[in-house]
Image (cartoon, rainbow, N blue to C red; front, side, top):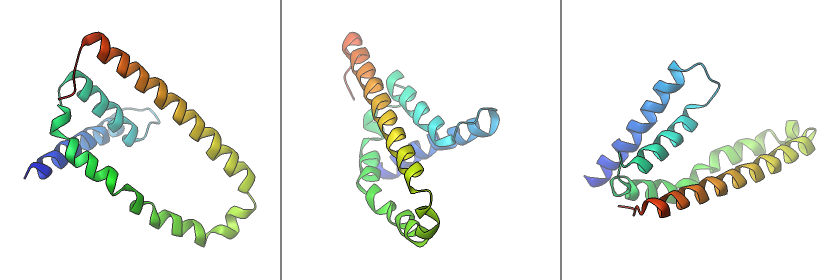
Length: 122
């Protein structure tokens, strides 16, 4: 029952993100709204980490198999991708480095804020 509640909390945040995506005129995907909302809710204590931790850990554990269907789809369109391989690799590497850097900076900022406020994960 605990897992069902935790999944419902995560699904609720995803639903709020979809509503924001539908209402706001910005070209931001709902998944990004969801990540920002979850971060804000966790940082402000609206949602306690203990209320979603096990379900989130489960979702992270099953993430690798979820990439199998897109990988198979890439294999079926390899002929079309071959001609644009260099630009696609450059874009993929560049955006990966940018995402890693921004994630690191945000993580460091969150850790600094937690140390200043003396907050502990619950």
